[in-house]
Amino acid sequence: MDAAKVLEFLVNLKLNNNREWFQDNKKWYDDSKKEVESFVSEMITTISAIDPSLKTPAMKDCMFRIFRDVRFGADKSPYKTNFGGFIAQGGRKSSYPGYYFHFEPNGESMLAGGVYQPQPETLKLLRNEVYYHSPELKAILEKPSFMEKFGQLGDFDKMKKAPKDFPADFSDTDLLKYRSYIVLQQIPDKMVVSSEYQDHVLGLVMELQPFMRFLNRAISNG
Image (tube, rainbow, N blue to C red; front, side, top):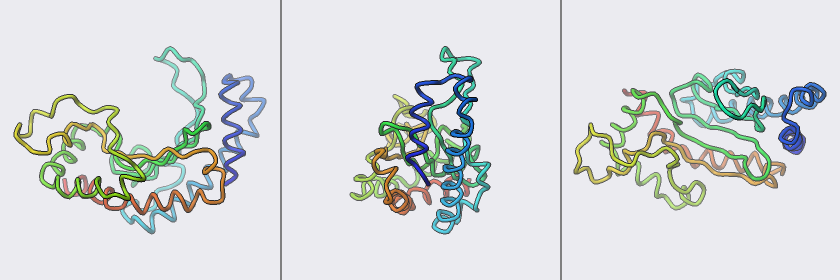
């Protein structure tokens, strides 16, 4: 993947987020999009060999569109200033855990893994698994190499109080407050454009495997 071309396009798109500029630079966009799609397609094949639960989804089902929905927000900029793909069983709309590849300049690129804002019935399955197997999840999250790469669970949408349908005296009640079960690593531009990027993200994918198996088990057995 020519990541430098991709990031350069996104830098310029952010400075010129309008339809006229986009149409004038449509080939640049198309070339950048193809670079990302080729990379995501390769990752689907490679990660599916590591994580068979993915069942090799189609690349087109994993990619997010660059066009923004401007109907309800105050920001009427027509385009996202990133490329993203969610590799999961069934693609980007899946309720199963997956791997999110995000490309955005100025250190905003990332690899994330897990389940993002699932539907209530899926969230209940995840919380049940946490409730019955919290020592297992804690061991995964507290493994030094995992913490070094990902830190802690993302708490951007964490509840202030534990859900009411679990015992109040549960010792690991904090783990039930999450509405998403994801971890991520932000990746600097220097790494994204380097020859080491693919090996770097595959190392992250390998580290994620126990976490992903835990989440998959919760949903698959529900």
